[in-house]
Length: 72
Image 1: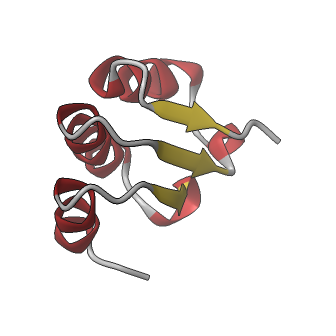
Image 2 (image 1 turned 60 degrees about the vertical axis):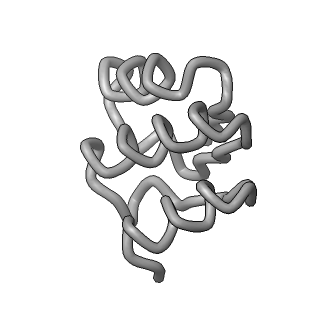
């Protein structure tokens, strides 16, 4: 598992990433989504069903169209 700062660095370099939502706090996912949006890359969130709808909305808003949720 990568640190949030490492994931953000990957996004800043232009890479897209796929993350298990169970492994990150919502606040971390929001920061990661913001980086995805800023760099015009994609964040894929697996196991998104473990988060509340309100949390997913916050992550989506931060990602501005650059977040894909896998709802199980």
